Amino acid sequence: MKHYTKEDIVRIVNEEDIEFIRLQFSDIFGQMKNVAVTRSQIEKVLNNKIMIDGSSIEGFTRIHESDQYLRPDLNTFAILPWQPAMHKTARLICDVYNPDGTPFVGDPRYVLKRTLKRAEELGYTFNVGPEMEFFLFEADDKGLPTSRTADAAGYFDMAPIDHGGNVRREICLMLEEMGFEIEASHHEVAEGQHEIDFKYEEALTAADNILTFRMAVKTISQNYGLHATFMPKPVFGINGSGMHVNMSLFRDGKNIFFDPNGTKQLSGEAYSFIAGVLAHVRGMAAITNPLVNSYKRLVPGYEAPCYLAWSASNRSALIRIPAARGSSTRVELRCPDPACNPYLAIAVCLAAGLDGIERGMTPPAEITENIYLMTEAERKAHGIDSLPGNLLEAVECLSADPLIVNTLGEHVFTHYTEGKRREWDEYRTRVTDWELKKYMIVY
Ligand code: GLU
Ligand code: MG
Image (cartoon, rainbow, N blue to C red):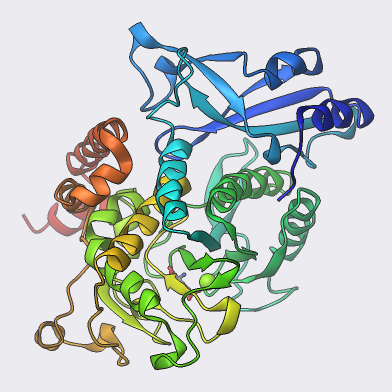
């Protein structure tokens, strides 16, 4: 991460001849919002004087208390490489503040910052590395998505079967220009599905990066006549898109999940962190898997988890411990999907893991068999519970988990769950094609 002062930013804006500055922030569902100003406003921007009307932002404030201020995080300054060179544009990610100078409790970035503060008080730095999967569909002449994926390739395939190679390369190069370190980029298992992994960062930067990544992928794909989607399960019958989250805690520059003498070279804290996540993951699901569609991915047989278990290698488990040890020791949570609000998702993961550590929890035994192939009775015998089966169940599990509710805070919890209950109602009252095919003739 870069460290910029106000003077640095004024200097770069002049030197690089930047014309526009986009001030970005996130609504409670993780949609990036922005207001653009011209360079003439730079002093106002840097003195936290840019105002927004919060009443028009999903989950923000009510009409009578709508003025809010954007405070840019100077270290997020970056030039947007896909904007035309003749009208150079930079962005700053912002925190949202009330007129009285207090942070706005409905700002998801603040929810994460507040949770990170708790970790910091315990001496921990939280590092997060997401694995972003997405689909590319061909766009029609109006730029709208079709149901045609751009290729028929599979895992690690390459051109000419993989038609996404060029766009992936451009995404990687542009993100590198913005300061990302790209670790891998490849075709995923399903046709039209891709994955790009960037290096882990401290949690706040990782969440900012996820938002930037989604914007970059969508924008650059458009230039290739493609529509990129982070919808978790766009096509029935093939793999969906996950956002596996790799997590580790550091203290004094050392990865505390690593213990050369521990079972599987994992420390007591690592096991307690796993136990904490397993204990709260049902309550976290409405955040990590936020859409009606998210639960169509979490079904057996498509490399996405549905059962609550951990394993050192088994990809059917919810939590996997990748083989790397030493400073790369990490816990991989496999349920989150790329449609989530990354600030809230990372906050609830951390809160759950810390709860496990603070309470000294112990996880159940490792499951090495393929859980998809177990019968319900076998799963019961192993004490393996399931993730919520749909968004409504997930919202109910969230409401029943005080740790997760407190992590979100009253404002975000209330607005988030109200929104998700509305989404569920919209869905459950629709008559689908599947119902028509199944029932129309027979009944
Ligand atoms: N696409 C799978 C998922 O939904 C994951 C495949 C993989 O292991 O990378 O989580
Ligand atoms: Mg993958």
